[in-house]
Image 1 (cartoon, rainbow, N blue to C red):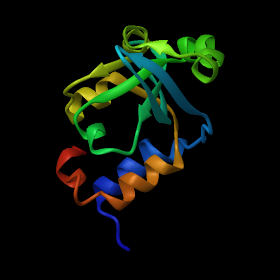
Image 2: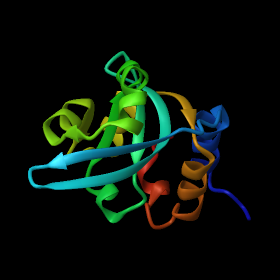
Image 3: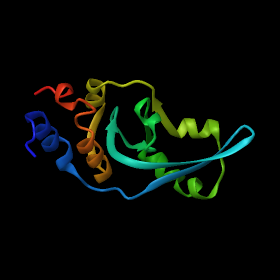
Image 4: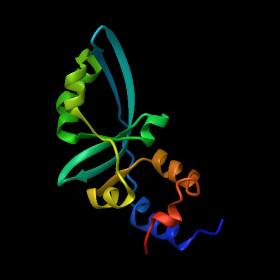
Length: 139
C-alpha cells in the first residue's frame, strides 16, 4: 500500500509515539432511578490545556459526536471507586469531561500526544479515507 504524504506525516508525528495503555474504565452510576454501566477504553494519553488526561472512547457512534476525557490524577484517585461503587450521574459528569464539538485544528492544538492505543492506530488506519484525513492534514 502506497501512503500519501499526509498519511506518512501523521504516522511520523502522531502514531510513532506508541506506548499502549491497557486500562479500561468501567463506570457504574445512578441515573436517577436506573443504575447504568458504561465501559470506556483509554485511547490516548495527552495534555489538554497543560493538564495530563486520558482520552476515552466507547466504540459507539456517539464517539463521533463528542470528545471525552478524564484527568489522569482524577482517574487514579478514583480508580478503586470506579470498580467498587455506584457513582451519581452528576459526579460522573464532573470526572469525565466532554467537548461536544471539536474540529481537527482544535484537536491538534489542544493535544500534546503522549501515548496512543494500538486500537486507535488501527481505527485511523482503517478509516483514513472515511475520515478524509488527506484533506484534514495540512503539510
